[in-house]
Length: 353
Image (cartoon, rainbow, N blue to C red; front, side, top):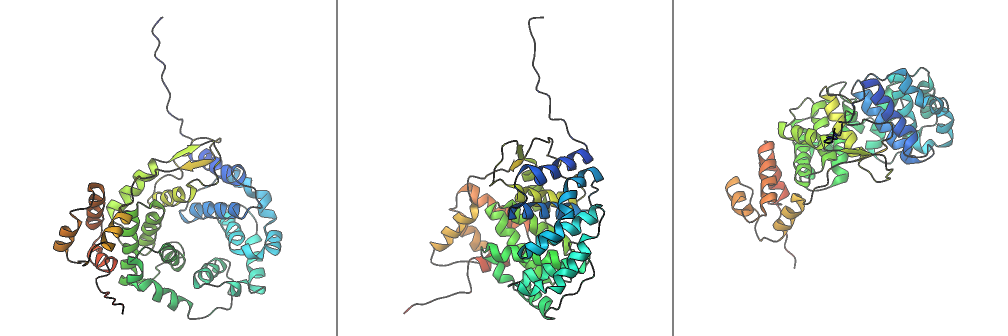
């Protein structure tokens, strides 16, 4: 037969247990040395995603961490500065089904050595308290901690301006106050407004990592997640490409956050991972940042307008793709009007002598 058509078969999808075993093996053994702090960060985040989304992880997959788990208490004693990563790994491995009682012993050691007092920020103290609560340990802590966290997230104007540190602290505070969706964090309408402001900025910047964290936070807070944001995250996640080439600067965290949100919505875990050989993930990089262009436009005009009619007049000269992004963000959130009033600094008038 002279005419032969060669077909490229589609990637074979791994079943749930095999896929999670491959993902855990990749991050436990295929990317970084176990003494690297970034190994701790990646693996703590991976296990946290699986545990908080209620995934079933087979015993064979968890065995990849068995030897490391047995040495966790010793590592804690030598590396107390990394106690939150190490403690989180122990807690999540046990919660996912790896037998043992390392976490309780580690929690008591952390309390006995008062490690929470070594933290500089309320955010880190909140995370430590959340972790210790999982084993019933109670550190001595400032009783005003939660009040300060709520005061911070309630100040929505803070979050209408680009500030990555503040934005990620907002989402993480919601994670900790809600115990990752396990109970009502009792956040105010102003805190929900703050989350929308960050979500709008993330959408204008095309920052999938931050937008996914906002959507997760809204879900944990019991608030409505804009459908437009959900659809964008799902599409962005689906475009990710896994490869066999190691890369210290890949997009694993962004992929984790997008996948975490889809898992919380009932989707399969790491559905795009299909090979034990894959060790790096790369997501779509967008050519333009509408947020940057919009900011530069605002900087270059004498007056800034907050009402919808004048906003349309002001944005008419923006490039088409930027204008489309602004219009999309406006339609996606009921808080866009108040966001833009703060973003455009309409309440500030500064005179210099």
